[in-house]
Length: 327
Image (cartoon, rainbow, N blue to C red; front, side, top):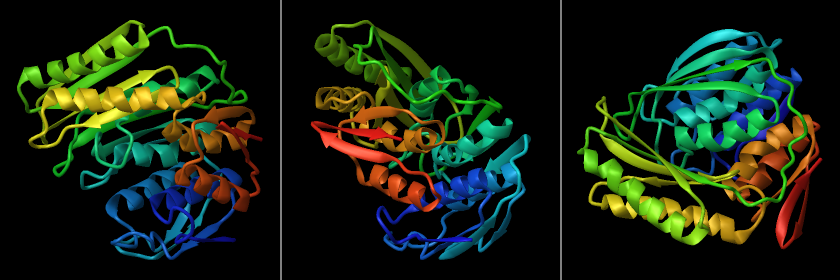
């Protein structure tokens, strides 16, 4: 059994999600102690329990310590199997982060996961970023992934619902060509708000991106009624993306501009992928080989490299203007 100190490096939920995914992939039992010790409210929160349950269901794992506030868990995996899994976070906890933990394991055997929770929440990728950036990159390397956004969910009520189905997939090495994107994409969403909110978000993002990048922008509006109220704007150009999340009192135009400026900053910094995608791709890089560059080695990326090494996977990082990750 491998023991992981959850207070090291990033010291949050990433260590927990990565540890159970790597445990399932390597069929090695893992114990995580001092769970989220660096967070103001340490121990397991609902979305962490949901992520562990999703991975456990995909590999018939035995678990200890899955209760709110627990500072220690033990995860004993079996062979990954194809399952149709349903998980309710029970709060507006991030659907995307639950899916991130489950996906590497599911790609081995196939299956589906339906998650109820928050689809666009703070300190997490939006479900649109996952679908349009991470999943597109993985699909170009051999993954077979299908996403259905059934409901949108925002803080504090949640209530979003997403179903992701995958087929057993063997990924090719994770590599990229240094080429300028021919177009960019915008998805502007709102729930229980006037139609003009999503329209203004998209228009503001499109004006800025079209002016600065000089390439066509494809726009999609997603306006719904649901259990929660909120808005978001997700933008991307190739393997780089960014998110603007609506807040009470923040004008819709500002949300679109925030997303566009964050994307432009990632593009200006260089590298083949954005700094957030880099840490999400590292587990797939370790499994399939390859190389890619990012603007910097974030604390999340450094944490993932540290964690991978504890399971016997070595990812090298080298800085020369940008950071190169390779196997």
